[in-house]
Length: 112
Image 1 (cartoon, one colour):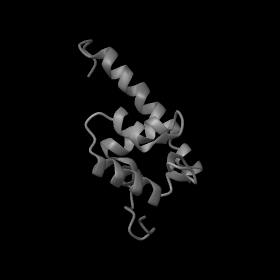
Image 2 (cartoon, rainbow, N blue to C red):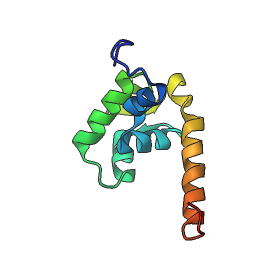
Image 3 (tube, rainbow, N blue to C red):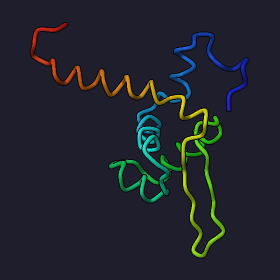
């Protein structure tokens, strides 16, 4: 987790620092719908390696964006979900999805 002194001065740069990687955004997108287990995320995020997913989840947890819940069961069960702070990213991802759909709908329509 970055300290306040280590965070960029620009708020947009801070947001990009925290959620700007492709995999972080896609993990957050999935967690907006429900809690997920590690293997579910790995299966759903085609192309992500186990190491990258592990690192991504640890980083998001360290930054307070997601929570990791380990259940005392045999076999062990761990679920990842958005924290209260992470849920505040919902409007950002909703806007990104809306803009992405707008872009896809307007390719070739002379909009530039």
